[in-house]
Image (tube, rainbow, N blue to C red; front, side, top):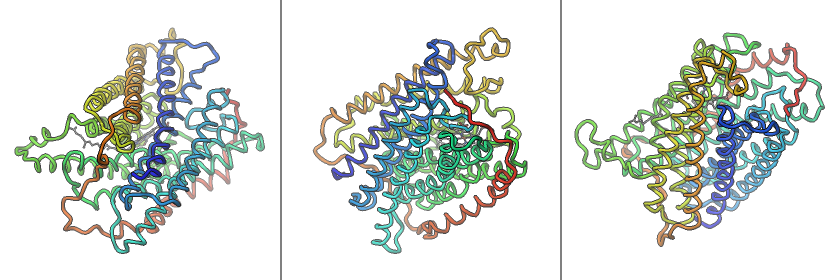
Length: 545
Ligand code: HAS
């Protein structure tokens, strides 16, 4: 890496790691509080800690880590470096995100923004919290602009050629992100900021939730796609294999752009004010967005098998033994893939209109996203970090740190099992999410849930310990590990069979963006017009602290 790119990417990762520390500490504390292990004085609320946990991890850690990772891969695959103009965009974006993060954190810590990471109206936070979130979103767009400018330059210089897969996927991820965040940007600018400043007496809650979930579901694919980039592009090289195909991963990403956005209503199945037909359409489209993940399962198994066979494995499953089980760069993401199987299956349950009535707003949903975001995605991010940080600082991933990483990944995996399995069970037993029940221990309604609470509480300790080990390893790899004489490896896999050219239509972004727009218009126009023309009885804002 050139110094300019190195500092830029490290700056993103550094802020992401600080958010990870804050969010993990808050996560453990709220978990211990909710499950009755500790009792805080009234000044420190469960909802305040839960807000810090959600915002720091789901919104800040992810966004900064992802943009750092995408910038690194874009620089590497599009000519080895970013140009000054790309870096300027990315730095302005970084500054906005850091200012937004600082403002948001202060508002949460001083208890003026206890509104959870979904900040549903009519709960009202300090206006500065919403301004902070807007800064983070706009800052992230500028990170996207940096990726777009680098990509556009490469394409101008390589007319008629298919772009490098990593860069292509980064562009797709940022297109998805920008289209998705338009919803939350409109909500924040036109509804929440006026509400928080007191410029409007009431707020159309149905509209604000719809705008939020227009953003909220593709948000989960903004988290997932960088993990898929690592699985598709980097892991084949790490396992001494080749990519199964160049077109298939591109097609999966295009499908994610098309189908991940018009499905937000599946978070609103239980809400009045949206006609059933639109909800059923969202359910159908959600089941369509499962398809690119199923294609990914297929491609990953194919890649693993081909790698094993290329190294001499014969027999049906002998190739499994050839995989580098002792390499944390592979092993941590692999644990994530395993957890994604039940996590994804849970998502299919959520998406099924009728079954959703059983699990909506219960701890089942919290269990679902601890298996997907906090396991599949986060374990992959661990794997990325163990390789990317030393690659940036040109230091060695020593075998001791590698082994520590494997232990740390196990600790995380086991912690997440202890966390998410009981959550799924108590969810089916009807335990609501986001509600501190510890004060109702005598109430018969909580009795069936009680045996599971100690396990969920304990999981927080496992997970926090795992994060401390991870951050310790990062500090070592950043500043103290032995230096390398030659540049560290940046694993980029090659395609096995180049005889099938990649269809250029996959690179025609205006077409995919236009089709996405059409799908969005089909799904959202009528319900939105309805909500605006015949609004539900709107609510006065409720101060949240
Ligand atoms: Fe979800 C709620 C539906 C995926 C995150 N989801 C949430 C929330 C979050 C979240 C944060 O339809 C809560 C939001 C809130 O606060 O209210 N989700 C789905 C569906 C999928 C899905 C259909 N979710 C994700 C991912 C997330 C995530 C990914 C984060 C990263 N989700 C829902 C619905 C709700 C919801 C409803 C609303 C519920 C409600 O009522 O509130 C699908 O995309 C899942 C497809 C995935 C698969 C798995 C594929 C497996 C792979 C691994 C391969 C393994 C290998 C190795 C190769 C079908 C790719 C194996 C090797 C061995 C040896 C075994």
